[in-house]
Length: 578
Image 1: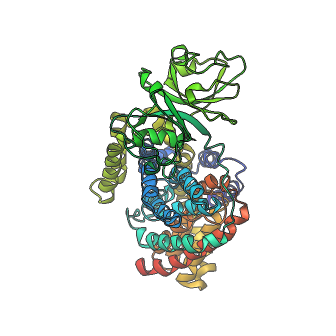
Image 2 (image 1 turned 90 degrees about the horizontal axis):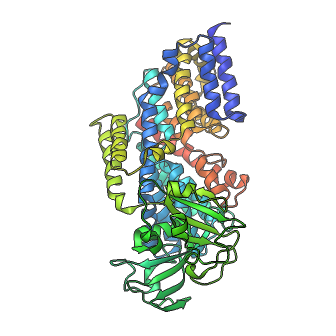
Image 3 (image 1 turned 120 degrees about the vertical axis):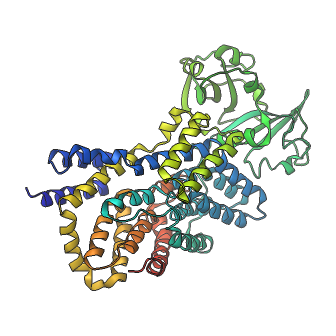
């Protein structure tokens, strides 16, 4: 069979599989790569070159550096700081959305959405705003921010990495900002003033992801809580924690009033989700005494365990059961569906109680059959003491790479090496932070791009397209390519849609005598703006908690997509002439 016909058949099959997701996208990409090898369309060296490309290494390194920022609690701290300083619910939400867009310009939009989700949900709950009117804007703001810089989303990096093979210059670090910033500003205005009128009013469903725990935390010397009232502390308003009781010496005050003044050594029984309790420990100077007494070395893990029938803990308090001595681990908090309002230390363990347990990896593995691990939350712990160093490494890599002092790939790889050497992240966490399906997809599609050009298939296909699209003129061509890319991003991944459209756009532009650059920019922006369906990962994170329907995204996302389209068509030709 003619190589051109064969590769076009493979191209169509890949499109169908990407769109239907009958197989995972990375499996489809590997199958495509295998076919290219088996049919002799690529040599092994050409096929595997993508796995060692600077694009793949840069992507993997950025995934790890984003995890370093999350582990240090940097992004969470930003959200909490904004919530503390805001005067109104509407102002808080708008400030948070603007901040999310800004943070997402330099980190993964999915990670940004995940970190800000409990912050925004808690703010909406306390302000009396339906969660459904806050969570979808959160996801959309993170996507809008991703169009501002080269590292704002993996799609931008993928497009930039594929350009040299087509004879085009890679994207500059801030090149997309010329269109990305106006799109983000107009998009945020839409989220501020239009989206709330289109969104339904539904409360959040966060019980599974934000299980409420009861924890005893003591005000340590130098704590931010020392000498302030509960009202001034902002424990409920800013940190999402409910103070159930305060123990001072032998006296316990249940349901303390807002004017109750806290002193050093007070033990607060607080109720709240895991993330809020862990964040409070790091930012407020409150400690778990059981954790302080526990001496652990090496790999320390944080897990949720459920108490099963037959456990020796049943009917006893944690102190009576000598939990720390028996298991070599400490209980930071306890969750019970029908909780009695009393101190954690007085609660007698029941079947079905969920304990938040911290201890050495070996001791956690040896908890026994009567304490079943529900999930490992180790990576959700943050340590703000390491935040300045994490920010310094990330900002240093971005600055050096963005200014061109060293290649971006070199800057981020060195930053990852320093993060590992300084123990800001463990090697296991680093490998776990990498989104391997994206890496495999990118590497395989880079190889497909090579075969597409080498066999002449790109020339044949773009020649046909140029004949059809020539009457539209440059603006019509840009609009058509933008809309087709947006359509493709709905059923398939953003990266796959961009890599499919890129060679077609470049080839068609050259055939018609246009500069390919404006069409490259248009495809990059279009591939990163998936608002019409909830299939984008950031949207999927809020889909369940916001109790949205598919049509909710169509109703709100269609207008935002139209605005993005109009702003892009107005700006792109002026910055990158045809």
